[in-house]
Length: 297
Ligand SMILES: Nc1nc2c(ncn2[C@@H]2O[C@H](COP(=O)(O)OP(=O)(O)OP(=O)(O)O)[C@@H](O)[C@H]2O)c(=O)[nH]1
Ligand SMILES: [Mg+2]
Image (tube, rainbow, N blue to C red; front, side):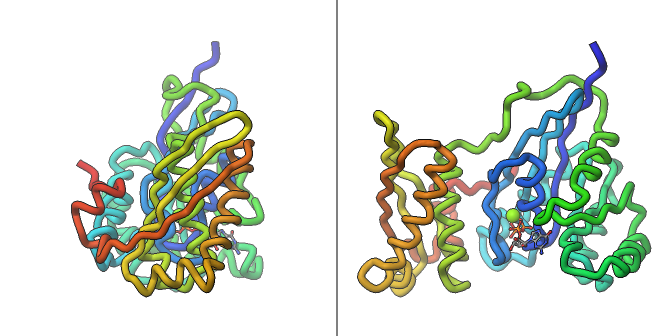
């Protein structure tokens, strides 16, 4: 038998740089939700990709940002904690030669590590080809990365090359998971995230940031799955907007969510949505825990 390689790959970076899009593309399935608003990912999401004799365990993380509430603190702590479990780290950035304070703070943290750090310059579909070298140089001056790889997660550009590079940095060792394992996310969690993604897509900025979703019931019957879920928001006024005129917004969120759930579960879904107000839940330790958010040990 040939020797196998396996390892954990931490994906870190500022919010909205395309971490979840990149992980979904590599795993070939939509596991993590994505949106054009920052702070979309709230938990560490694990996916497993087995390719030949190599097994990669990706850890997608919340974007590292200046947190404004307890939820933000938990998100950032969780994101930073993955570097302690990872065998390789990928720092994802946008294509620019302006390296801001946010990136610099992440780089300072990465400089303390002894594991290989690969810089991935994402979204290269948005720039002219000639600019890439300039951006690579700007980052090279900040830190000695093991590799700098330009990609487009959205267009799937240079991703196979990135995967081969990641495999080359994996330590030798047995697989951690069975070859068919894809993620640690349960169907229930993915369903609640789908609903949050639709509120991110359809609602104005401040509302989705204060939204959490819990799936209260998920029951498979003959050819059908009954799902009940609650959208938790921070204010009565937000509740009104989430429900919309005559329930129109909630219907829109529900229909789009149901379509995605049916695709994922491959079964007809009957979705019931409720909206509840929990004042300031993002700063309430008890409610945060209740909604499944906890700090790493
Ligand atoms: N043009 C372009 N857009 C991209 C690319 N990759 C991601 N995006 C877009 O960037 C936005 C953010 O993507 P996400 O994958 O949600 O970013 P993230 O880093 O996971 O964000 P957080 O979870 O908030 O930290 C979305 O609108 C994506 O469609 C890319 O290669 N090219
Ligand atoms: Mg994300």
